[in-house]
Length: 98
Image (cartoon, rainbow, N blue to C red; front, side, top):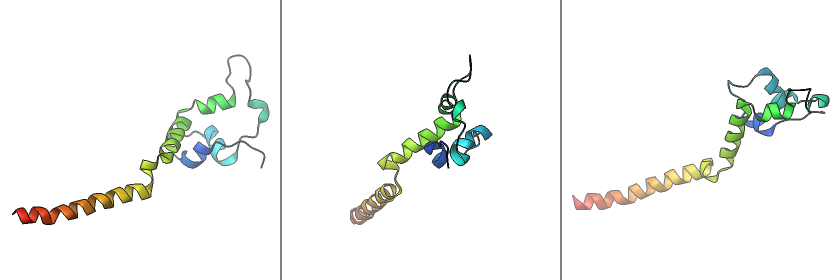
């Protein structure tokens, strides 16, 4: 395979904002190397167009969020378990007060 892919859009690019041109960055790969650079006066290069697209920015934000430890599934579950355990410990103390 001779093509360029966007990892953020490949992992998190399934959204309604993705256009046909942008799916090439996540599924097919962009292999028109002659169009990677500026394509004439007033035309942006393919990389710039992709990185400035709303669907890429959304996918990149989702990628950044996935890297945050506080959003990992095991951390969220662990936090919920700690909270429940704490509540279960407090319940007998509250019952004694009654």
